[in-house]
Length: 119
Image 1 (cartoon, rainbow, N blue to C red):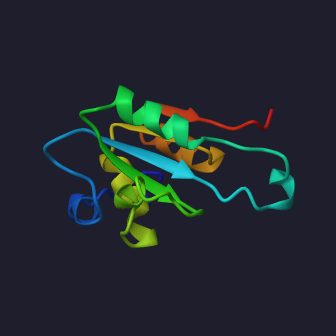
Image 2: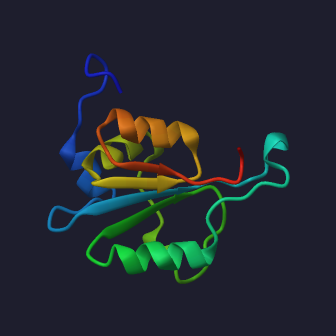
């Protein structure tokens, strides 16, 4: 994401789900299937409901490794994997279970929240 290597392309962001007419919030959910994830957890569906309630004017974009319930499937990121950083760069905030993506969002200047039971 260093500016010598990454150049934001707005068309890729907006073709992949970011919106121009409202703020965008990227949410990242991991699968919790790795060996080091056993016994740990992140956001619950009730947490997603709270996020949606507290950010009513935001376009929610959910990048998820796991199945989403029917209420959340319409928010799933459906763009190309290699365009996700362009979407992230078009967002106004990040909340997620991936420490890597939380750091990437912070590098891009986004307010970023990492959520996990891992200490």
